[in-house]
Structure formats: C-alpha cells, structure tokens
Length: 56
Image 1 (cartoon, rainbow, N blue to C red):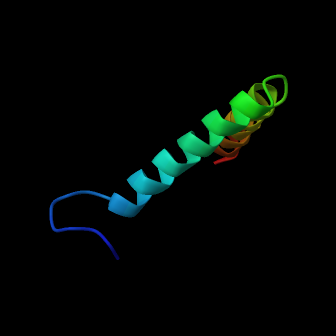
Image 2 (cartoon, rainbow, N blue to C red):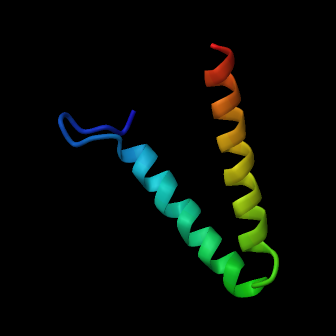
C-alpha cells in the first residue's frame, strides 16, 4: 500500500517503531508490569510456534 518500489515494507517498519515507542512509554509509566507481560507474550508465542512445528 505505502511500499515504494525497492524500498521495503514501510508500513511494517512504521508499525514496529510505533509499537516500540508505546512499549517504552508504558515501561516508564508502569515499570513493574510491562516487562513481565511482554516476556510472557514472547514465551507463549515461542511455545505456540514450536508446538505447531512439532505437529507439522
């Protein structure tokens, strides 16, 4: 949609940067909560991917 010929996935990069900025702001506002939630999300995603690869 917003991809320039040969420039790469502009929308995906902008979404990743926006997510990173929001995460940093939330980490500054709630230092005891955000990191644990993010690590749980990453861990569960890894388990889901490994399980689906195992079953494939």
